[in-house]
Image (tube, rainbow, N blue to C red; front, side, top):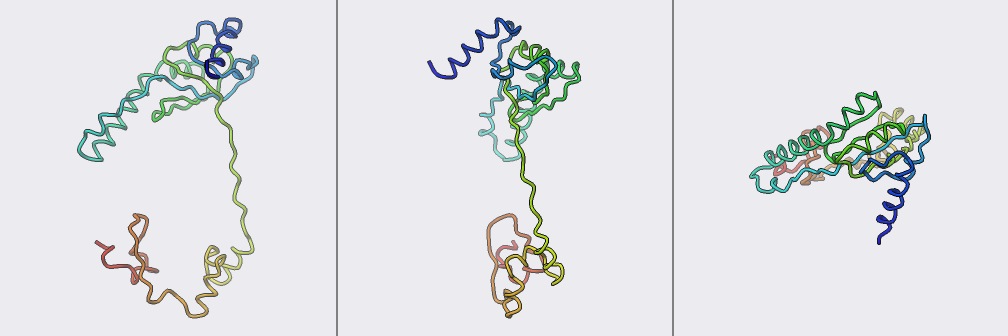
Amino acid sequence: MTLRHLLTLAVACSLSTSGFASQSAWIAPELLALAAGDTAPVLIFLEEQADLSAASLLPTKTLKGRFVFESLREVAARAQGPLLTILQGSSAEHRAFFISNLIWAEVTPTLLRQLAAVEGIERIVPSPQGSIERPVERVDAVAAGKKAGVEWNLSMIRADDVWAEGYTGQGAMVGGIDTGYIWQHPAITRQWSLCSRT
């Protein structure tokens, strides 16, 4: 028996005494301990997933993309419908996602019970919480760049020192196959390979 099976069995045993006896979805144990009056952000994963295998038989990228997009949207709309009705009726904050067929929602214990009783849910888990470190502005580099009329990023790599010695890229040929190049840019258009312009 795997750890997942043991966890599922343990949760199933606790459901009979926690008011979740009628639900069929696997609920993360920490959500079962949610106190009355509290809320928690959760991810509700639905069982049904779109069958996208037929996309490989279509002749063009456009047709494949349209097929995948429409299939994902259709399955999500059908599978998520009953849950969205409950969420909208409860005025709970929520957001539906069609690519993975899941719903993010802020739930109370009562709402969690209602949602868990809906057929077609695979599992309900806490929504991961994270934070992003904000960039630190290097005031000295920015100020130096502005004074010299050079952008701060070029000042940081001391490009202006190289230019002062007379190296400005003359004679260099720029080439590449990436789609991110803007060969018409005034700074590089004269050095751009003619074969890249076609």
